[in-house]
Image (cartoon, rainbow, N blue to C red; front, side, top):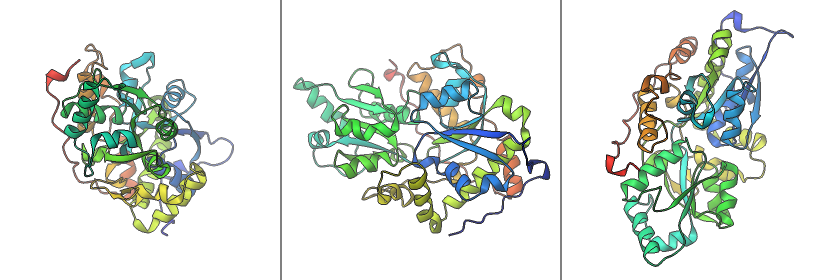
Length: 375
C-alpha cells in the first residue's frame, strides 16, 4: 500500500496551535466520498497543515442547508448542486466555489426483480427502448404507476435518468413517477416495494443486488461515459478569507484521488470506507466500485477519481442545459450566474505544488434532447 504521499505546501499553511481553525467538511456516505475519507485516514490533511472535521450527512438537502447557512465551510456536492445554489433554487442560495471534482461515473440504475421480469431477458446495459416498452405494456393493462427514485432533484442521477428515459420515448414527468429518496435508504425502499427502481451512487446498487431486492440494469457511465459526478465545493467567503487553506485542502484531495486510482490501494480504501461509513456492509459490496464492477457485472466506464479532479465549466454547462430543459432553472437566471461557481484557480494552485499534470480532455456530453420533450 502506497499510503505515504508527500503533499508539498507553503510554510504559511503549516499553522498549528489553538489559533488554527478547523475546516468543517460535510459529505454523504457514498463510495465517491472516498477522496475525503482517504485524505483524513492516511494523513493528507495533516500533511498540508489542516485541521479538518468530516461530518457525515444522510441526505443532500441537509448537507446543502448546512453549507448554505454556514454550519460547514466545504462539502461533497452533487455536480448540479452548485448551479442550484447559485440560482437560489428552493429558496436556498449560496456563493460557493468548486475547488475540484471528486469522481467520474460511479452510479447505477437498479430495478426491482418484478420490473426486470416484466422487461424480460436483457443484456447489461439495459436499453432505454426495452425499458420504455415494458412501461407501455404496464400502462396498457392498467398496472400501477412505476416509481423510480433519485437521490436529490438537482443531481446527476435525476438528469441522466431523465435523459435515458426520454431517449427511450418516455416523458419522466408523465409516464412514471420520480421520487426523492436519500442514498442510504434506497436499497431498503426497493426491498420493501416502496419504489420499483432507483438511480444512486455506489455502494447502494450493489447492496440492493446483494440483498436480492433488485437487479442492476445499467450504470450512468453507460449514458454519459466518464461523466463528472461529485465535486468539492467551498463557501466563497471562506476562499476569500482563507485562500491558503482553501488551496491546501484542494491539494490534499487531488493527492487522495491519485492514491485511489492506484489498484494497490483499493483493499485499503475498502477498509477505510467500511470502518468509517459502511460498517454494516460486506467488504465485497464496497469493493465492487473500486474494482470496476457492479456486483458481478464489469462496467465499461467504472468509478474513477484522478482524471475527474479538474473542474470543467463546459461539463457543468451540460447539467445547466438539462436543468433548463426540464424547467428547473428560471429563464431570468443567466448562464454566467449559474456557472459562476466553476473556477479552476484553486485546482491549478494545488496542482502546481503537487506537480500534477492536467488530466486529458474529458469525453463530450451526450447530445441535447429535442425540444419536444420539454414539459
